[in-house]
Image (cartoon, rainbow, N blue to C red; front, side, top):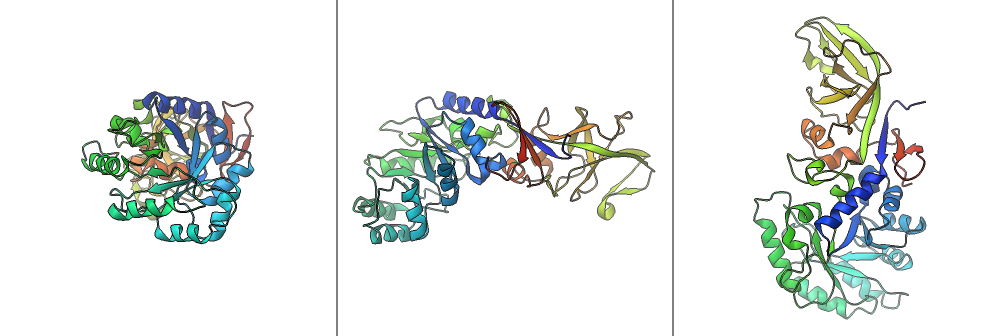
Length: 381
């Protein structure tokens, strides 16, 4: 039986997108970002599809531990590093690399000099994101402190993060690149700066040379899932294939008279007699509650429009262009000719929010790597 709401994951598209990263950055190692349950796609299943990546990046220690426990052997970097001794010991036990971004982390490393093992680290420079990392002289001082830490594997790797790389007209990205390169030019460790927007839009950060060495490693995230990091563009514009498509079905078709309103608060009023359809999906499944009337929806592969507010379990669509539809007919909310980037614009949000927002009750159908199976998207399998 087809589920009421389900996502289809094309895992061959994940592999295709990884190959596109290699095409954009042929001379760099790839640290595939699979944090937040691989942007809602399932961390372990995506890691399996990304077996040709040189390493993985996750946000938190527990994500890295789960990958190791699932048997993944690639290098794994924890982007938030650690905040306590227990997390440091987990990093050592499971051979996870840590981003170092605060003096408190260095103090913990110094206090735990007798701990067993060596910790690979990425020292983070704050070049203008103003979130995590050391600035200016503090960055150099942190580097020297880490050189003296018995627990730290040498050489020390170096990392920063773009703030505005998705805006190709903003000079801040160029300033960040120059600041980082100037700070790390005499340090021997590997460097990483380029996220998806950097990989596609800023080619001068992708190559490791003495003049511009900023990304020995690139860190693709959104582009691995087939989405564009640039406003007004879709993944297809950059040779990417969407991995996730979201589907449901019509559960009712009815006629509403002119002047009647549809949905909570009566935010949409029928200007003429209207045939509408009710679709079994809502914000309880992850279809964004702020998606506005007029957003496109595919019914039987043809575009119709959302009308009225999104409910927890249902939405309504205008079927005037499809008089012959019936309950049970298939509906696509994004994917298969309806880019998630387009839906994000109608919801005043970004594709990340939609992909990460799919809830536990939505079923997953995998395709592309062996036989498909259905399971909840909240799992990491």
